[in-house]
Image (cartoon, rainbow, N blue to C red; front, side):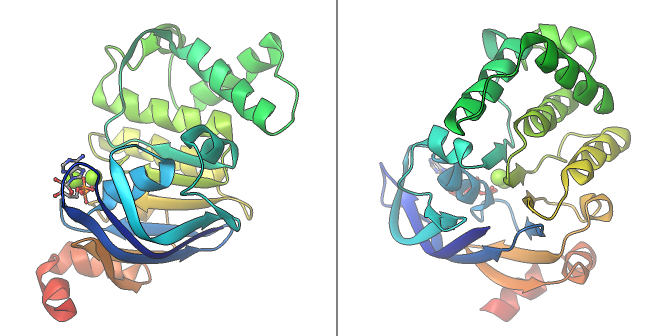
Length: 251
Ligand code: ADP
Ligand code: MG
Ligand code: MG
């Protein structure tokens, strides 16, 4: 599904290297988790995959189902099936949440050569998916994320993901700012989307999310590269011992 090879990234404006040879291969239907100390480049990796500006790829490649992502416009990456749930969802004053979702869904369908959803079908779908995530009708009417709590913003990201039905879903610290109940809701939303043709990359600081969203593979990222990969037990090891031992081992 996603194959990242020897990815090196620096800031466009400064000579600061952030990713230093990332290799990662995620098969269809697989769930991979990335953990790692703050500042190790986890968000940067997700931004570079999604096409955020300000970064320069100096070496390496990233393909989605064999297609080179790094040369595509952000909207083309989304149309190809990539989705990123932001660590810090942005407020968009003046744009209604419902209008935003409908525009995104229809743009996606158009890019895939499918017909637009009728207003009725769209409403029915969005209401059902919002209900599963306990997002009330009021939140659907408000401008995107404006006045939402931290947890509501994160649930709204999952609603977007559920509506867009991407193939490769990246969740950047979607669990931070969530209380236990909201984390359960979000995890159920993610688990409901798991299937043989859809993959997930879950970036998290905390092992507890991985009790709900069971990963196939856990990677540890430090200083811009993946220093260790393993099964779910690797997340438990981090929870118990912290990163220090793994960092020393990698040195
Ligand atoms: P993580 O998500 O693992 O906490 P980030 O990807 O957010 O790490 O950041 C990795 C490093 O790159 C940090 O040192 C961060 O300050 C730096 N960085 C990332 N993006 C920028 C930017 N646009 N400008 C300046 N520094 C940046
Ligand atoms: Mg961070
Ligand atoms: Mg981050």
